[in-house]
Length: 43
Image 1 (cartoon, rainbow, N blue to C red):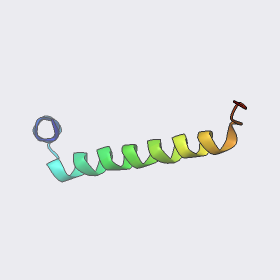
Image 2 (tube, helix red, strand yellow):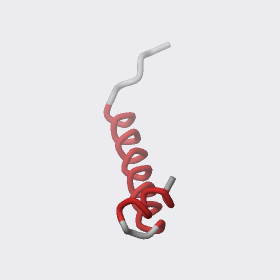
Image 3 (spheres, rainbow, N blue to C red):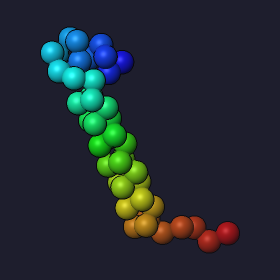
């Protein structure tokens, strides 16, 4: 997919890999923050 985006937009595949990695890491950080903030229910 990165190669197709790179070809279409005239950029490099590495740029799109970087963008995907950045998105993934931000998603993990957001999930971790939400998990830490929301209280868990007692069993």
